[in-house]
Image (cartoon, rainbow, N blue to C red; front, top):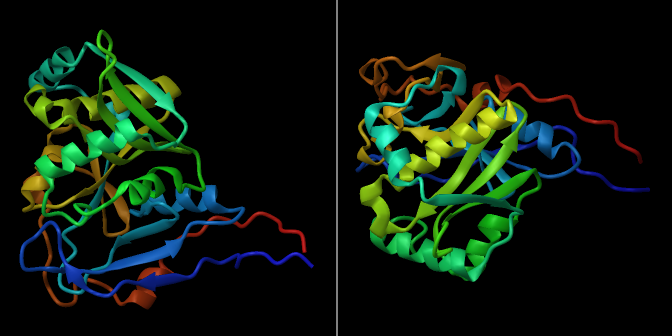
Length: 273
């Protein structure tokens, strides 16, 4: 008899730890394993409900004290570039996009280390070694790509994004770039180019991860038109960021059992025993 994984995914909660976005807060995550024959359908379904992928895990914030973290995505059909975003596109017009299979390289890791040391030296990934980096890139049970950006003249690698391909869009799982090129708004350019990737593929959304009101690290996401955030169990258009604020009321977060019960799961594929 062939043994198979449970058809219904099991959900768990992490222990509280310091929040990386809001000082003095504690974060907690609701998560489930991403594996088995139904991994792609599960990733698609839960991504549409505010979850994010990290290797073979899907998670979303489930903090006891606030619900500030909101999953964000860009509706490609409603996006119009601002003047500063058009300048960013021109400044980085010399970069050439190259999409590859999710395979880690030493060149990527060297760029990753320079980026962390410059931008996130105190972050949770600061001590990541080459093996952990390779796991982040390569451990994916779904359709993923590494999108590289290289100088078309020198061939130098200047930007990388680990990107998942969903049924309704592309998800920017993690991106990093040459810190010395921050003045060219390279981070903005990576998002702009993923909007183009989605358009070229006929996909309606670009998933950006979480937007957190009050967090300087996340302010850049609110500058993109067509932005939607997942609030109260549905996607809502963000026309004014000030309309979306954190809720720290002790009853603002439903109990874990209610959160899990409200999650819509895809139908499992037939399994042979």
